Amino acid sequence: MNDEARQSRSIKMKPSIVRKARHRAVEEGKTLGRWIEEAIDEKIEREERVKEGK
Image: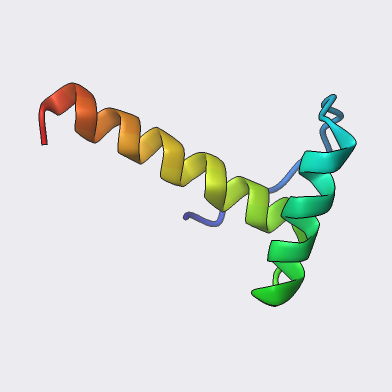
C-alpha cells in the first residue's frame, strides 16, 4: 500500500461480518479499517490475476 491519506467513509455492512472482521483485525494487531483495506486490496489483486489468466 502507498502513503495515500485516509479519509473517513460510511458504508453499510452486516453487523456479523463487521464482528468477524474486527476479531481478525485484533488478532493481527491492526485497526478494523486497515484490515478491511487490506482485504479489499487482496480481492482486487486476485480478480486481476484471474482476468489475466494467471
